[in-house]
Each structure stands twice: as C-alpha cells, then as structure tokens.
Length: 235
Figure 1 (cartoon, one colour):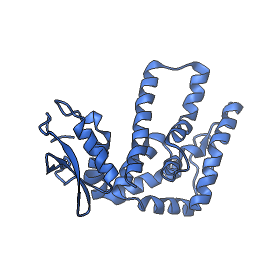
Figure 2 (figure 1 turned 135 degrees about the vertical axis):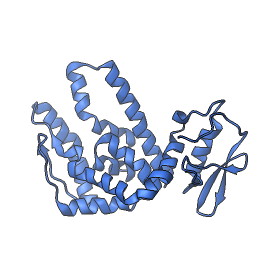
Figure 3 (figure 1 turned 30 degrees about the horizontal axis):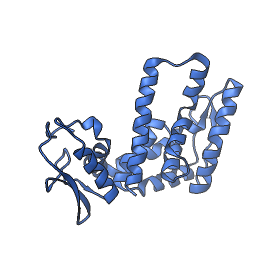
C-alpha cells in the first residue's frame, strides 16, 4: 500500500461507469493503485465495496481495514502483469493437494479424513474430469498428468481479479480443490475452511487449544473468508 495518502482528504467516495469497467472516485477524481494504474474494476458490486472502504476511513487511512481494495490493487499491480506465472503456481497445488495426503494413524482420524475429504475429491473428479490419487503419509504422490492439465486449464480461465481472490483461497487452505469448491459454489467458504483445518481440529480435541495458535487461526480464517467474498464480487 506504499504511496497511499496518510490522511483522508475527500468528502465522498463514489462509483462511476467507465469504458472497461467501474471506477472509484474520491470527490470526482479516480483512485489509482500503488503502481499508479487506474483502479478500474470489473463489476459495480466490487467497485461499490471498494468505495465503501474508502468512505469508511476516518482521519488516517488504514489499509488493514480495506481488504477489498488491497485485493483489487493486487489484481492490477501483481496478478495481471504476471498472470501466467501466478496461475501456474496456483495450479501446481493440485500436485500436492492437502486432501490427497492422509494420516496413517490413529484410525479415527483416518476415518474422519476419508468421510470429509473423499466426497470433495469425488466431486472434483466429476466436475473437472480430474481424478486425484490419495496416499497415506507425507511421501509425494504423483498425480495423473491429464488431471493436472484440466485443473490448470480451469485456473487459467479466471480473470486477474478472480485470481487475486482465488490465490488466497488456495494458499491459505493448501488445497486447489477446496479453492475450486468455493468458486464453483459447491462448498460454502466456511465449510471449505473447516475442511482445511480438519487435522488442526483433531489436535485441539486431543490436546486442547493454544491461545497464540488460536489467534493466528482466527486471522487466517478471516483472510480466507475475505478472499471468498472478493471472488464473489468479481462475478
């Protein structure tokens, strides 16, 4: 967020339709990204969400309270200029997807993972014609190349704005399949989050919660849900 004004200088944040999308205006002047690109957004809903964040600022501008704006900036300044590299990196999660690596013990955890994760993998196999193999333990499990190719093709079909939201869904959860489940409406964001933290939930049941770890988890959950909201606003 470097380059942003430190204090609020505008009275009104508004949205205006322009060629190529929707602009956010501060007292009639268009907002620019940190890299000085015009902040033109693909949908009115996304532009209105960004404008609401700007309108809510009081006194000093606090970027940490503006997650939609930050993701929009990322889409224009980071994702769009290196779209192929970012989508390739995200698609690569399919080769080491969280849902494919299972515990070897105890039996109750093994069964819980199967109940929770197998249906999601079965859905992805049908939806994308991309079956993935599971394995017990942490040794690398090679996945069918055809499956990885189909998943990568789908990721590349996203717009830079969608990729900006999708990035956090995948990177935070560790699962390409869970991220796709959210974007396809197969999983609610809260469901996907809980599925991604199945192992952590098991550990808490056995040993109790750690206060510091719980704070980190809460922060990550908020970021995950914000990413899902951003993706939805792009559609």
